[in-house]
Image (cartoon, rainbow, N blue to C red; front, side, top):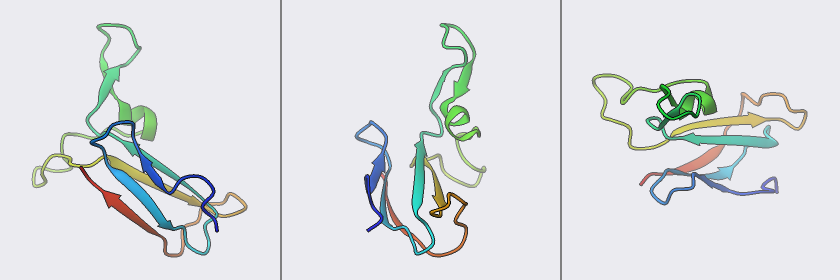
Amino acid sequence: GKMQYTKEVFRNDPTTTRVTLLDLGANADKVVVSLVDPLMSKPDTGAEGSPQRKVSEDQLGKSFGSRLSQYWQMWVTDVIRIERFGSDCTIATNGMFKFRVQMP
């Protein structure tokens, strides 16, 4: 099969979201899964006292607030980004694939 590395992805924290890849789909050869805590911050420059920057900005190029809108509750999972690529490394935009999300 296509699964050469790992089927389950999670951050190094026992209480985080877990994503299990079940089926990559017929037109995907490679999958990149990113998991980021939407609220975690770190110093922008690494120096003590520097302004805080969301880790998601470094990892995903986007910052997330404490919730997506005023009508939603606060985050209960990590932000999940899944990218699929064909054997020629082009983006696989069509076709079904399956994955499971486990939340703390």
